[in-house]
Amino acid sequence: MMFKHIAFAGLGLIGGSLALSFAERGVKLSAYDLNTDTLAKAVKTGLFEYATDDIDELLSLDFDLLYICLPVRSACEFITELGRRKFTKPVTDASSTKADVAGAAKQAGITFCGGHPIAGKEVSGFTNAEAGLFKGAYHILTPLSPEFDTQALRELHEAAGMKVTIMEPEQHDRTFGLVSHLPHITAFAMVQTVSAVDIDALNYTGAGFKDFSRIAASDPRMWTDIFLENDKNMIDLIDSYIAEMERWKNAIQNSDEKAMYQMIEHAAELRRRLS
Image (cartoon, rainbow, N blue to C red; front, side, top):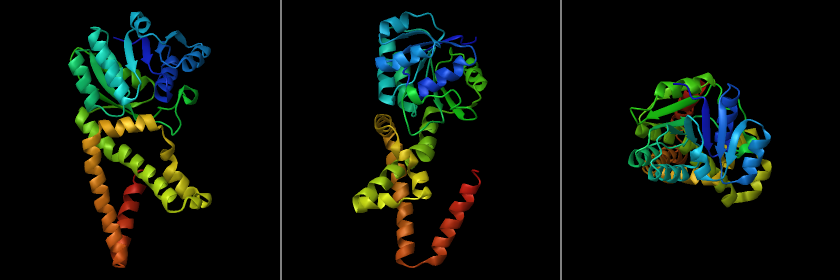
């Protein structure tokens, strides 16, 4: 099957950007959001067939796919509500953690395939949405229901220029805890450390600090939910990071030039492979 009409629950940066991207490829759009200002901005684009802040109206619409783009905890609550209403249409999501969302979908008994587009910005909201945000980015699918047409969902995102891959929810949360969630905590903690030690030092930051700390300007609600939903992985990864920082501390305390040089050389080699 092809998804010709998609209803979005949540029109922030991610939901809005996905909607704009799909609209460029002729997909019909409908939207649900509790923020009426957001809905007004969406309507002004002329791309949405219908926009509402009423869940009953949303679920009464004739669409092919419901795409949930809400913060993780809100997404789980929304999925639970779908189960209570015996909702039968295909559902996917864009949440940054997958295990708890998959658990909620399984308990709700809905037809579900999880998803996570690996792109974003440090700013949020529909105002900052852009159709090209996900071009060339990975989209991770975490299938759950055998009756869900996963191939159609893959083709939908590939047509938007995304590279689609499949993971188990638990593997996803561990992997992105390491390469996304831990870096965000590191950025938040670094800015807080400067603030606590000498906030005036922020007046003298250069490009390096600004590049590294860019993601510290991210949405607090979204990232609080992510850390709480991926808590077990995050605790383990923070412990690993603390152990690595202890290695650096010991090398500096012991004036171990060779150890510091080797750690920097190893990290630099790995980072250059990403370019």
